[in-house]
Image (cartoon, rainbow, N blue to C red):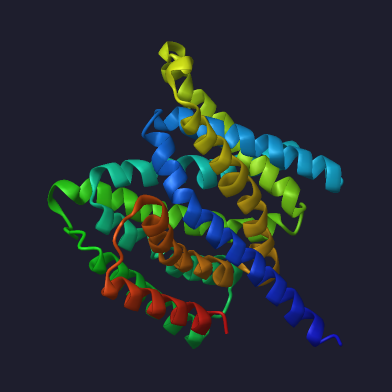
Length: 297
């Protein structure tokens, strides 16, 4: 029985991570709607404030709060700034300065960086299946991007955006890897609540200049709904489930589920936004799924 129980636990955790993938794929249209009607700092401020409240309620109602030392708060603040502050900034400004094709390909390398960080920080051995599966998944995502007809141009005017996108991929991988050690000290909900609260503080401060002159009544209800929905699901609930994955499966296996997001995003873009689906995208989706299956072995 001792050999069967971990397998069942892994299966349950992987099911939760598939829910995260689904939420993040649906989240793309919500974010696109939200930032079309309000500035990014204000949109993100609402998202993180909503998520912080939700995670706070979950934490204090379902688990005991573990005392955090001053040194611990400083470390958690640093991790929160990486995960929800600097990463978001690098990603958004990178996307603004480079093409969508460049950004998607570069950010899809985050599972590879997670493998490197896990090997470096925790001295984990990297199995051949992990290398092969990650490479196959990345190949599938490249096929998806190429299949959309998006141009991929490196260097030139897009150089700054490319560099920022690489930084974003590194920051996401680093924050995913670093959470493992913190989850040995704090519960999943407490760690998630603290990290998201740090993001809420950062983005609220960033939103103050825009919020002063903003006519809040002129913003449609749909934009507020997009921010609240995205904050509650993508930033709130998904943060907890993602941390559960890191705790039970480790950073490497958890990070590889990221590669499923663009696959489902294609489907939801077609259903919600009416964006066309091309045959090469379907091939890329199949290759990405095969890579995830291989790497999770």
